[in-house]
Amino acid sequence: PRAWTLAARPQGAPKPTDFALIDVPAHDLAPGEIRVRNLWLSVDPYMRGRMNDVKSYVPPFQLGEPMSGGAVGEVVESRDPGLREGDLVQHMSGWRDEAVLPAAEAHKLPDLPVEPQAFLGQFGMPGMTAYFGLLDVAAAKEGDVVFVSAAAGAVGSTVVQIAKARGMTVIGSAGGADKAAYVRELGADAVIDYKSVGSVVRALAAEAPGGIDVYFDNVGGDHLDAAFAAARSHARFAICGMIDIYNDVKPTELRYLARVIGARITVRGFIVSDYLPRAGEFYRDMAGWLAQGRLKRDETVREGLEATPQAFMDLFTGGNTGKMLVKL
Ligand code: NDP
Image (cartoon, rainbow, N blue to C red; front, side):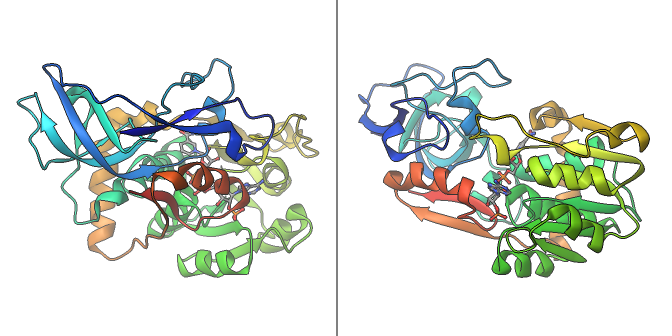
């Protein structure tokens, strides 16, 4: 078996030489362990933070050690009564073709009529992030005007659709004409192609003349600043991610930050794992919307273990529409 390791901690944007593919020795299973042939690997923006040697809500990757991340695979050997050969499971031993792990750390895929890889995207961690971030953290409700950035991505595309299913007005932003068209197809009422508008502040003011009630932040930077500028009194901001600054060394500049005060804006950060105990609510509502045909799902699929670092790096240049996945 083979696994990707971090060869060097990236300075700024990650580059191919920061990664190394190594052979890992095969070993026999201990009682309670399973062997999984990975079928799908997830690459996610939060992994950039794990490449820095800093304390965070997930520990940093160790240099030379196999990296980890979401994966879906098939159990090929089991020494645990709870899982059998042929079971499809999701787990966190990604970035490798074969994983040996305690059965307790693997979960059978939920019983929903979607393809297995959907549990790495809309029906998995990113979908849950969208659902709880919008409905709980931002307390978004019918009639609200919602602005969401990176709206063509895994989290953002799901935010758009949940917001529409719950009767909100949605303004999405994404980079490029194709992505803007896709966000409109998802049901957004207005779309900002941030790569062509010049100023996001001006574009958002034009699309939301009455202001916004909710901002779902995936980007930070100028998008967050634009949301501050456009916020109505008592607006709520769910701070999900700030991909614009993950590779940065310089601090961000927010000209409109002080509107937090005058407009009495609530700004709340969150981590999706806080909501795992409430996953049942997510699956129930998602199953309902799925059955009603309300959920579109797009994926960008790269082939082969070798393609994993590039798939990850391309998240930072917008190489994906919907969930970025690696198919083994
Ligand atoms: P996406 O599928 O949205 O992929 C990332 C997208 O971000 C790219 O496709 C690109 O789209 C956009 N992007 C990249 N760089 C920039 C930039 N400088 N400015 C504006 N847009 C940029 O990823 P996810 O859906 O997995 O994640 C979205 C966000 O949610 C990330 O910030 C992530 O860290 C965060 N997150 C947070 C979680 C939590 O628990 N708080 C859990 C999961 C995700 P485009 O072409 O439109 O620029």
